[in-house]
Image (cartoon, rainbow, N blue to C red):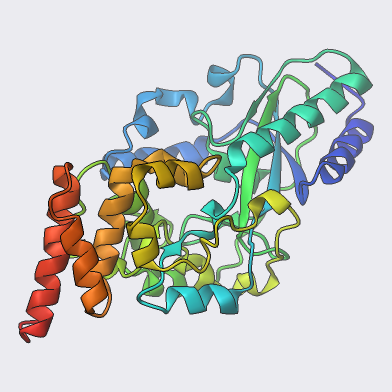
Length: 356
């Protein structure tokens, strides 16, 4: 569907900002370069148990196969950083504190951003009449970072996150696939240069080469996506990270330009930004479900929540309180929980014995 390009594009960008997005860009549908990168990543089995990354075939890299007649993609970003880097680092550096990736401290972003994208689509429709579209927020086989890069929102860094020169990388992405024939924005260019700080800081060395992340080693994968046991050789490297990891973003020099979120819904709930491991380990399943309602954290369930915290407690300095808490879960009904609790107790025993 052809429209008055310059006028409608400016309206779309203005409406997007009014709706709370920090930036709006336009991309075409040629993702051939990203398709090659994805194929190589899958061929290396870097996706681990992320079967959904390959089961949709070419739909992920060829937008018109996912949503017929797609000619242009409207890409948006929204800041989510809830606190400054100093406070964030303080929490990460405290071994008895629970570190949760900052994107998950508040309300789950999927619903909020989808509602905003729908409002943006409604605005467009009120201006030009009915048109074909479909909105996505990490909810379908979409190469959102590659699309955002083509739309000029930033470049994909060596850690595989999108980086914006004026806003760092602490933001969510969303898209509207549309049959509107819109003039695309200029693709962003890379400004990582020779910097490899993200590769060096990764606690599990999951960034095996620039732009290559082995998900099987990534803390976010291990604590969120992995269904079963966390490999023993990686447990000590996880530290106190119980849901996701932000190290590669924390170290990125471009994040000195990052802005704190303006969205109240993205602010920490239940003091999760300062919570202690023992406090969260003692949550019953009922408490877990109540305190993670509307949060991305709930998707891992109480069992994996306890699994992750057991590992973190095994990495914390030994104390009577920690050993009492671990022993209280040693007879838990879940074999997965019992396994990781037993590992944590054994690790403390080996430390006390001077074995490690």
